[in-house]
Amino acid sequence: MQVVSVNGGEVCMRLMPQSWMIADDGAKEICTGVLYSLADSASGLAVFAEARELTPIATLDLRMDYFRSATTERALLAVAACRYLTDEIAFIHCNIFPEGDKQPVAAGSATFMRNTRGQRFQTTLGQKREA
Image (cartoon, rainbow, N blue to C red; front, side):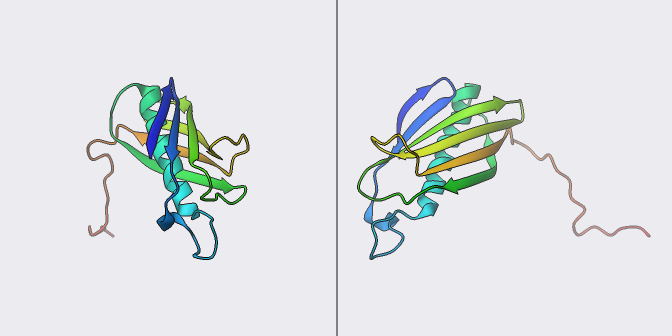
């Protein structure tokens, strides 16, 4: 993956298809897991671009809609934009296009936790409960 541009809270990343990304030997379609990884990477970078600081983040949710097959004929561009940012949560939208095409092959909506440093949750797992 290659960063093409960062403009405010919007990021564009480029991915050149490789033979190992093909879902089936008889087809020239890229596996949807590759699109998912591209969307996650671009969306995470959009969080940093909007926040303008490097603090730990974690993907809480990433939902993908696949509109049509992504083929190996052209590079893929992921355009991710931060829609809303709080101190702890970031909401991102990402479209994936074949290079030179205006119609996306997939779109994703992601939610990221920000500032994940340190222990924030306590668990009672393994502890005895009093009756």
